Structures are given as structure tokens and as C-alpha cells.
Image (cartoon, rainbow, N blue to C red; front, side, top):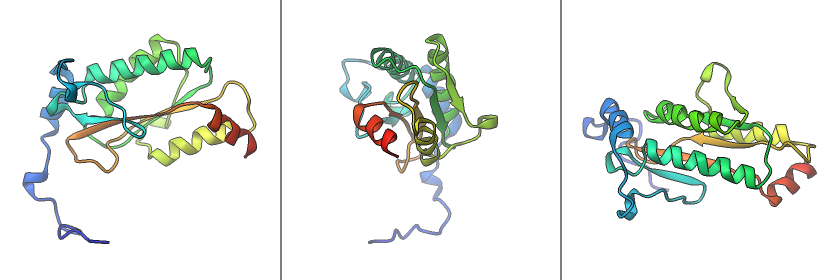
Length: 172
């Protein structure tokens, strides 16, 4: 395993992100659907991109959140949705956008007390603990995080209900 020459050192100023400009881009940029890089695109577990590139902004979060609500309705998922976020500059704005959609759709959202930052494993654990022994009213979850991606990226991950998850929860 290679260790970065930057490990243990302060960030170079060229690596820092102007957080106010990033948040402004989140709220003001409008994706052009004819540009593939500006469309919502889920990878392994979610969508990520930079507001500077119009690849992660309010339009994306509103659309993804509504799609999650429609998916939950299709799956007859009526349990709570555990929601966490990390310390990324776009986490609070994305949380606010998503909560508007989730509330409008009547989704019961569970947040950390005091709206504290929540690591992804904590949300996963909360879902598993809540669902253990249940066969109805199962929980799912969302985490806003760019994970290990660059500071200018935002990330939005959804942990859905599916038969494999349900089987695993009942057997634990």
C-alpha cells in the first residue's frame, strides 16, 4: 500500500474548497439534461458530483428524494427512514432539500438528536437494529456524504429495502 506524501501534513491551499461558493452553486446552478455529466447517476450506492460542475445540486437532491418516495410507495415501505449526514459543506443544504420532499410525501424521518453529524455505519446500524425481528414497517435510510471523494463533491446514498435485506434482517 502506498502512503501519500501529503499524509499527516496540512492541506495545501490549492486543495481547499471555497465553501460559500460551493453552497451558492448548489442553490443556483440548473442541470442541463442534454449534458450527461449533469444528470443524476447512481453508482454503487448513490449519486455524487460537484455543485461546481452542476452535477450535485438542489435539483438533483429534490429529484432523487422524490424518486425514493415513489420507490417506497411502490414497495409499500411504511417504516421510518433513518437519515444521516457528514460534515461536508453541502450536507446541511442537501438535508434541507431532501427533508422538504420527504415531509411532503409523509415519510417518517429519523435524524440524530440535535441534527448531529452521523457516520454512514451508524445509519446502517440503526436500520438493522430497528428492523431486527420485524416483517412489516421496515426502515430504510439515506446518508449525505461524499465519502472518500474530493471536498468539492457531494454524495447522496440510499439504502433501500429489498428481499435480500429483509431476509437477512429476519435471520439476525
